[in-house]
Length: 451
Image 1 (cartoon, rainbow, N blue to C red):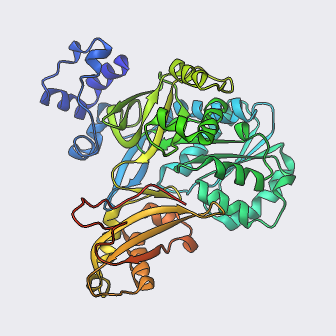
Image 2: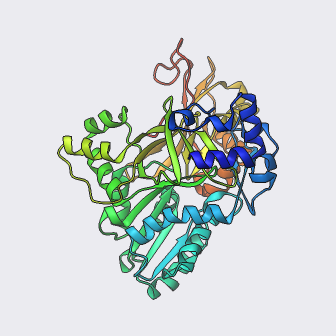
Image 3: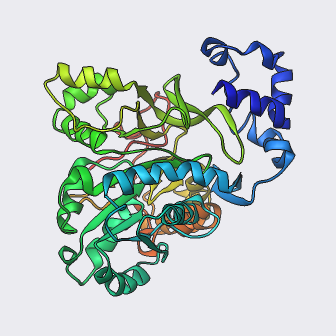
C-alpha cells in the first residue's frame, strides 16, 4: 500500500492536489502509522470535487467506464481498465477454480447481472473470459437479467458441460430458480452472488430447490462495488464460519457487535487493504481511479485470520480449511440506503414520490424504507408511510407514485429490479405511530431487512 500511495501521489493530479491542501509531503509517508494518518477519501470530498480525468493516472481516462446511481439518481462515473479486470479475476478464480473446480470441470457460466453501463454484468463477463484465456474450460453466456432468455438458453447448453454456474443478485437468482419448468437436479448448479446480504436459511432453501449439494462449496458471495470491482469473496472457510454463527446468534453478536448477520468474506490484503473507520469500511486499492483510504460507506469491520481462528476455537468450532487471508464483514450501506435486487434504494427517491399530488396532501413526508423476507425467502420492498393527522390516504396510489419516481430517478432500480417486483408494498400508519414514527425521537428513514 505504501508503494501504491507513492505511485498515486506522483501520477494522479487530484490526489497531488489533496495532499498539498493537507500540507502532506509524500516523502514523509514511510510507515503504516504514517499511512493511517492520510486523509480519508469520500465521493463528496474527492470524486465530486475534481474533473474526472484528474482522478486518473496522468489525467487519462481508462479504456472502459462503469456507472453507479447516486443518491439523487445522477450517475457516478468510474473509469476502469483491463489491468483492473486482471487483478479482480483472482477473486473469481478463488471462487470458480479453487471452490468449484472449474479448472478440471467443463463449466457453463451464466451471467445474470444486468448488462450495460452498470459494473456487474460486463465486468463479470470480462473476468470470466480472463479465466477462459488462462486455459480453464469455462464457457460464458450473458443473457443478463432477462429471465426468459436465461431459461431458454440454459437447457440448450447445460447438457454439454459438467456444471452450471449462475452469477447474479440473490433475489433475482431465486426468482429464476423458482420460475423454471425443468428439473434443476438434472444439472450440477453452482451460484455466485453479490449485492445483498442473505441469510443462511436462504442459502439452504435455494440450494435445495436447485438440487445443489455441499452448501460450503456450491455457492459463494462476492463483495463488490462500482468504485473498485470485487473487494473480497466467500470461501468454504468463511461460509462454514458464517453458518456456525447463524446457528449461534449470541456468538455472532460477540464477534460483530450486532444481532444482524453480515456478509463474511476473505480478501487479499496485497490487492485491497481494508481498515475500519468509525463503524464503516474503507479500503485502498488500484483501479481506474486509484483510491487511498476511501470510505465506501458500508457498515462493517475487519478480523485478521489468526484472530478469527482463535475466536472459533474458543467457541468449540473448527472452520473448513482454506486460504490464510483476513476476513471483512459487511452489513451494507450505512448512508440510509437499502439494497433490493442489487440496486441501492435511496430515501431521496422515495421522498419525491410522496411529494406528488394527491399524495402530498395525505402524508407528513416521513416514511421507513426496508426490505422484508417472507416465509418462502422472497424479498420485497416495503415503505411504511406516516399519514397526516385526519387523513386516510390510498396505499395503491402512493405505491404507484413511489414506483414512478424510482424508475425516473434511479437507473439501478429501473434496470436491476424485475418489472413485476418494482411496485413497493406500502403500509400506512397514523401520525406519531409509536413503532415507526415515535414523537420526539430523531427519525430514521431505513431499517435493516427483516422477516
